[in-house]
Length: 353
Ligand SMILES: O=C(O)CCC(=O)C(=O)O
Ligand SMILES: [Fe+2]
Image 1: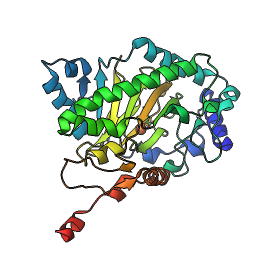
Image 2: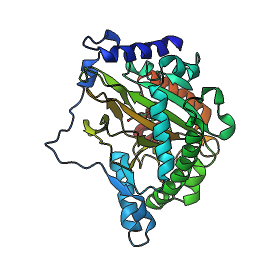
Image 3: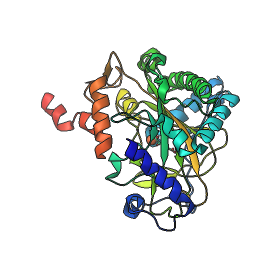
């Protein structure tokens, strides 16, 4: 992975004078693949208000809004989420300070051969030999006993405690959201909560430096999140994230104080396809850098990734968690989608009848 980290180094050095874009970042065809919905068309990425979910007077209407956001978009912005402001601010500050460190300091927590955790570049395989215009730090945050502290930066000094507190807040927020999702789906709240409880959580901190060729580079290659639920904190207000819906890319701007939540493939399977795990990507900005802190929550039922009971005939075959994880990782590297291979086809259903 050392080589990969060095690639990130180059991108950083070239940022200062990037009039000529190195070939390994140039992928204009991929950037141009799909129409981007512009300012001329009104659209609204769903907004869900946690205060309204919690208020008995508005809870039913807001739960329906949450449900349709998860079915139609798989993405929503969450306001009044109840995450302590200082905890979110400390996470933002630690993220900013970490990426500002000189490269050799960041390399103190570089990824190791064959591993995912640590500082480096993580979407290489999926991008068919081209590099994403990003540097990232990936860490396992839950379960506590699975943390590899060697990858947790000691600099900035507040980093570890910021992430520790933020990680717990995200676990709590996930539980709060799941109760309303269960209500929308009409499943036992405990069935959905239990699928996530005590499961793994991973954080990815991303930094996308400004790029003089925003029409030629991708901050992150188009992908679907393979895990359960994704909670994204914008560290700044630089735009970049886009969600694919009906074949078109919808930019999703940073809304002050809101978190961006999206459905991952595991939740799509758990909900038997009711909720959609959407494709998304990140573009670079010509003027400003962008950073995000992204938390991924995993889910499984009795060691299996499978649809919850009560949601009709299973549309996905049940698979052991470890097998899912491996398959998903391989598919991501190949630019395919593992969840597709789990789908029970209609012809198969018909044969069974
Ligand atoms: O940084 C972003 O806006 C998106 C990151 C993302 O999609 C991911 O980490 O899976
Ligand atoms: Fe993602």
